[in-house]
View (cartoon, rainbow, N blue to C red):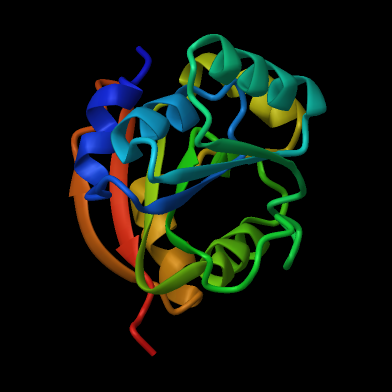
Length: 180
């Protein structure tokens, strides 16, 4: 049911030494996989609003001897909510988070702001959330389908590049910020 972060980060096209923002990093599965991929000369910015999750990421990183993850307490739905500079990263990742956001357009705008021109925004999202139907309904949240994600990113001026197999219950999509 779950996707494989180690497999999926290989699809993103990032290389050692790059900087990547994990937006809504949660428990840090993608931050850890990105950390291993980017290597000691790379950098992962794990941004989340949940301080407990950030503590977990920091502790896991220290225990595993990875010092290329910086945890940031921030709100990814607000412009400058990540506290990162404009154009600081080579890419950004949204993993299993879009459906939870109230301001999806705000989060996409923040991702676009923090990545360099030509940078990638990579999405791994639930394709099937039927198991959460009652919970989502009570919270007035809806799944973000792949076509809906394409519309969301296109409205922010971000170009769809390609999709990839992200696991049996997920879809993967890669978008690119224009060069100008």
